[in-house]
Image (cartoon, rainbow, N blue to C red):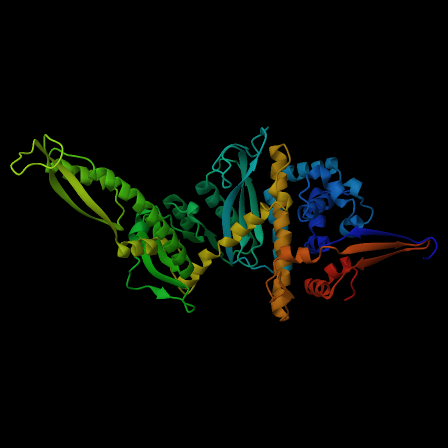
Length: 544
C-alpha cells in the first residue's frame, strides 16, 4: 500500500439520480432566487434538496435525524462543495420549513412544477385531480387564519380516532407528474375543494398557455349541479364520474341496452346518452369492462349466498307462527318480504291447520277446537335477476361537457376516466412507509403545510425520473430487467432505486490529491445513467 494514502467510502446508492433531477430542474437555484439570500452556508434551496434526498432515501427518518442520514453519504457530491452532514441540523431545516410556509407552498410548488414540465417536456392536456387525508397525533393549534386546521374528519385511512389534514393534488396524464398541490383543513369538503382546485388550475394554465385548453378529470366527489354549472360557465372542459346515487344515473344504466359498443380488444363496452340537465347539456357514457364484470359477478354471488341464508331463516321463523285468519297470515308474509331483493323469488301458500283439544292423532269424528293459519314459503334464486344485478353493478357513468366526439370520442372518454388511477398511485406513493411522507413528525400546522411542499417535491422528482427513463427506453428500443429478470420498458423508479443499492463512492486520499472512484457500477447501472443523461453520469463519475 502506498505510504500516506488513506481510503474511505460513502454510500451513494440511488441518491445520485435524485440529486440529478433536482439539478436538472434547478430546484435549489430557483428557491434561492425566490428567497434572495446568499449569506447562509446552507441556503433554503440546498436545505430543501437535502429534505428531498432524505424523503427518497428509503430511511423514513424524522427531520431532526437528517444529519444521521447524511453521515455516511457523499454530501458534497450531492449538495455542493463545503456542505457537511452536521450542517443539515434541525435548526437549519426548521428555518427552511418556516420560510416555505411564509412564501406559500402552493405557489412555490406551481412555480417549480412549471419549470420541470418545460425541461422534461411533459404534456398537460389532461389533468387528474383528487384529495386524500393524512392522520396525525397531537394538538396542532392554528395561530393565524393562513394555517390549515388539523382536526377530525372523514379519514381515507379509516382512522377516525385521529386528527388529520388533507392534501389536494393534480397530476398530468403524461407520466403522472404532479403540477399542483395544496394542503387543506382536516374537515374540508371534497365537493368544495375539488372545484376550487380545478378553478385554480384553469387560472394557472390559462395564464401560461391561453390557447391550449386542457381537460380536467375527477371522481364523483366533484360532480354536482352547482359545480358543473360553475365549470361550464368558466368554459372549462371536464370529465367526471357521475355518482351512482344520482336518480338520473340509476335511470340511464341498462345492462341490456341495444346499443352497447365493444372496444377492439373486447375488454370494454359502452353506450352513450346525451342528457339535458339543469346545469346544461352533458354527454354520458355508460361503461363496463370485462374485469369489472368479473369482480361484480363474484361480489354479487357472494352476497346472494349470504342473503339467501338470512332470508331462509326469516321464512322458517315465519312458517312457525300461527295466525287467527288467512288475511293475517297474508299480511305477515307481505310485511316480512317487503325488502326482498329482486333476485329472490318466493313460492308460498297459506294453509289452515286445525288444533284439537287432545294431544295425539284425532279421532275420525273429532271436531277441532280452533283453526289457525300458517305460511308455507320456499325461497328460490332467480339467476336472471342475479345476472342483471351484477351487470348493473359493473356499469358506471362517466360524464363530460365535451359534446363533440371529434375532440374526445366515447371510447377515449371511458379510457380518460380510467386513467384517474394515476393520482391514486401518487397518494399511495406519499403514504408509503419507505418514504418521508408516510409520517408527519412536525408539531405545528405551518410546518405541516411546508412539509406538504417537500412531499410534493418527492413525488415530482420520482415521477420525472421515471418518465425520462421510460420515454428513452422506448425511443431507443432498449429494455432493462424487471424484478424477475424479464425485459421491460416500463420499470418503476422504486425498482431502479433498489437496483442502485450498494453503490459506494471511494475516496482515495494521498498527500497530494484526492481521487474519487464509484464502486460496483454494473452494465445495467451504466445503461440507466446514460439514458437519463449527462448530469446523472457526472454525479456517478461516468464518462459520456
